[in-house]
Image (cartoon, rainbow, N blue to C red; front, side, top):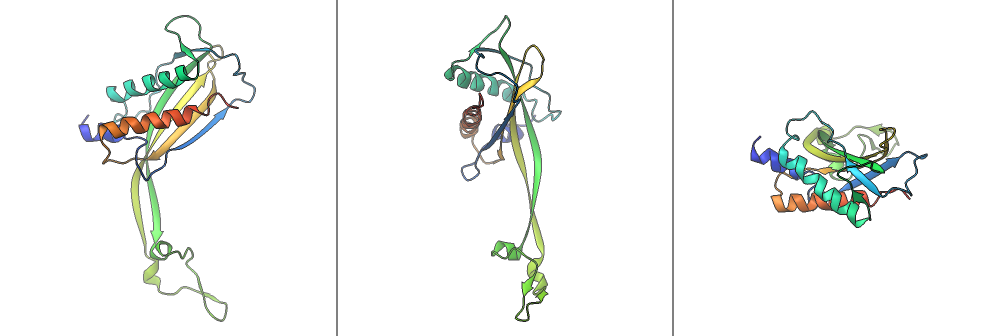
Length: 187
């Protein structure tokens, strides 16, 4: 794997101007109050060879471990944990389509004339242009070890910034994990 793609992926949730978005969902019938210990499941395979880079796969667990420890959870290397953790990383190509009029605040292809009839005017101003970019998403799942089913799933995503440094990328992923795990356990 070449270095630029590796660090692009490590820049997964990076960008000063791009916010880190997070969301979480959980099984309403799951009991979270008694959870104290956890163990790692093998990371889910995204099928994307760019993501299976050893460096990426080794970066997320220690950052999650640190946040879990800060919340009072203890990682078990052996024995029966109260819950199991798994993560995966996804890359998606996103596209936006914008017209020149949208760029200037006009969000409709219709311009109302004095006789209140909608008419398209200045068609050349409506020629769309697009932008293609990558979205990186980190998904962390908490599983019930007895049922093997997820009881909590959190998502963090942002537009990738290929210009981020290695240090900034790591810091941004760390912030994303911290922000995401604020939603665990659900309140």
